[in-house]
Image (cartoon, rainbow, N blue to C red; front, side):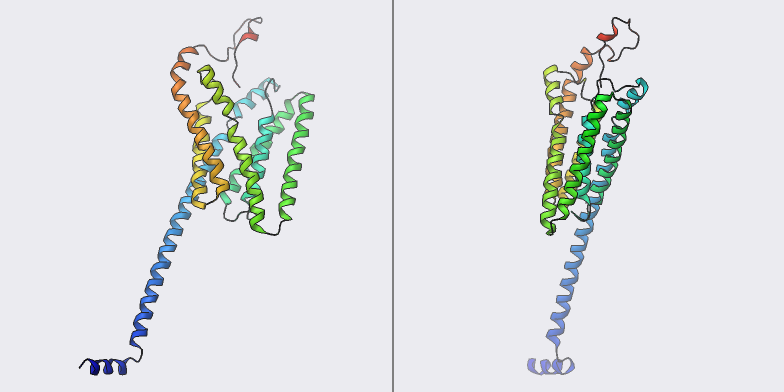
Length: 280
């Protein structure tokens, strides 16, 4: 009876087993494909969200020197301010900008945008500094600016000579990673100063907060992208930013009690003016 039924089934459909297994394989393939597409879309949305957030928080860092340059323009002098931070920041932005381009690492548009904006801000700050600096400072800053452009051109041209895209990405990635780590390590002096003086007078809260948020955003961006050249330096920046915030809240009370006088006193006698404390 069973054999008879099977003969009838075979006559009506010569390949019943193949047709069944074919449908099953196609269904499994479709389910796997949909799962992969879903995971890809979720990962891409998360990556883009982290990158956009990083761009927004980085903007807060880029505009932070504006009060300093308002003072420089108002006084017509760079006074005791240094232009080196803007030189270093420009070099860092140019290296990271090059890393984010499709020629080095594809699908890193948000790395390109944030460093393009950063480089533009640093150039404006450097130009303003040159306009109001003394001649000796101008010569030094111009020399450093030319050195930055020279180093950037060497990195750009040198990396393009490497035919292997993986090796090219590794070279520029290591340079951008080292540059970012050196930039994030610069607040270590301020951290040491805060611990020694037990005062947050020279560690602005919003600057520390912006550093922490930006670093955290790009750390997540790098983790989702599985890009060690992004998540390693920004992971370090996240830790340092967190330390700054912890120190700020820890020493805030004592700093508020000790620093009851304004940091900039405008109405002083001529002999007393040199003793007023200013914050840059």
